[in-house]
Length: 310
Image (tube, rainbow, N blue to C red; front, side):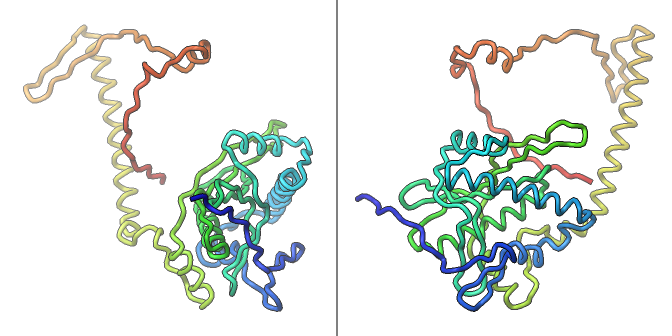
């Protein structure tokens, strides 16, 4: 049976763009970005000069408006950012449905979704445009919460609709001090946070309570931070010292013309200098795009790993 095409509902919320306020009748609703900053990201702008913040906001607004003009009126202003946006939509099969689509829980909160794309008669994808120079883990996590709450409100407002994908449209082409351009154009998928957790966050903020983030680092690992730092330092110092000793041993073995030393409990073997031939598959593919390489390609699983930055 053919699924009936879902048309998106109007939220009934009025958005005051100049004041960035949301109103439902005579009641002002809370925005999502301010709530996220209060609850989860209070240090987001610490140490950043106001001039830098204002310039970033100005540039971001310009890019948003240029892209929105294209989506609403098919007007291409010729900027690299719009050209990149068009390419991203074509490459990823994004069918624009709405821009700045206002969603709400109907009681306390509301926000505008940058981009809504139609996937099918009843499924949609939500995109958020970001113009950061660097997408830090903190910025990525904030966008994840933001988009997840949007998805929660979206499905709440459109009862039979489903959100299938969340992603960031990371678009930037800003001149740097040296005259070069900081050019970024990609789509970053975002894993959705369950709606019940989003609701817990919103409820805590409404009650004036501090939300306990279930995704924050567990206390048992936080308590081990100093210990982990010491282990990493010891590891680095040990590896550096071992490298020095190996260099000394190799130098002595080479000067003596010895290939092997054996202490009875440890064997030291000197590998002779040699050459290695490797095949540059990427260059070969670029030089011969007409060939089919699939019969010679092998896919293997790579285990996940943990990176610790100190």
